[in-house]
Length: 375
Ligand code: PHE
Image (cartoon, rainbow, N blue to C red):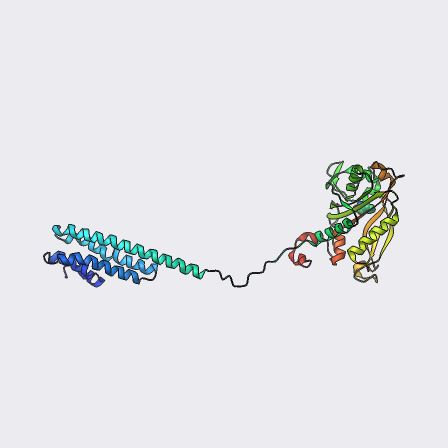
């Protein structure tokens, strides 16, 4: 045996039969043949058995290295084939190669089994427990400004008004001229205007939508014009250069200031609650005559006076007035036949009063800490 380390190696490695074969092949050619045909089966059985015992792919890999690896047992045997006498070499070579193929097949089959087991284990470990409580999904909600705008629209819709819209980029003629403010009229200074060209601008109010309406519809007219407006304002807690307005217009026969007061008082009762009282303070707009500011009693102090209302007890909520006869004339409506009233309010301002929001810029910041306070 000492002359045949492969045999000793095999004996130590466990393939006694195979070792025996080679040893026998080397030294005792006669009388050992039967044993030769058996050892391959025994070696195969042994390996199959060992293979079955492996519990992981790494164990299986160890086994493969131990047998078929570069320094593996079977590899060593194959290398030593050359030691055999040539008449035995062919036979032994065929057996060894057959054994090698069998071993490879056995290893591959076991690998498949172990891989599947590994996948099942992983699936089991990663299984989702559908009985666990779910994550709470935060549902979004309407922006406080949208809610305010929709609230205003609903009130006027219920009073029989239509909603009309117009472009944000307007002609000077609709934004100013038809509203009784020809070029160079000093009243234009009431609106700090973003001009696009000499004749085109970003509308400073939605009053031009009323002009467009009067030019295309015949009285009776009962509309509100909601939309975005622009003014070149110095931005602070109560002023932005972009904001929403809702303006309204009623034109029909016999429309008086009493109708204006009636409709707007109804609006305030609906929007702010019936306990709030209102008053009209004389004012000036080039397109209405007479003109007024509508005031509503402060909701924070109930009219007593507090820091929220500048200690006056009153909050200004909109401009309004009887449509100026010249404006009707500009739109082809005979002021002898028809009269009307108009009003205009800032939606941000209404929302600030409704929700007690002290800072107009919050509306555009999209800070969820702010927004989620108005579910
Ligand atoms: N257009 C005016 C403004 O934007 C508001 C207004 C509308 C006033 C209608 C009176 C009548 O300031």
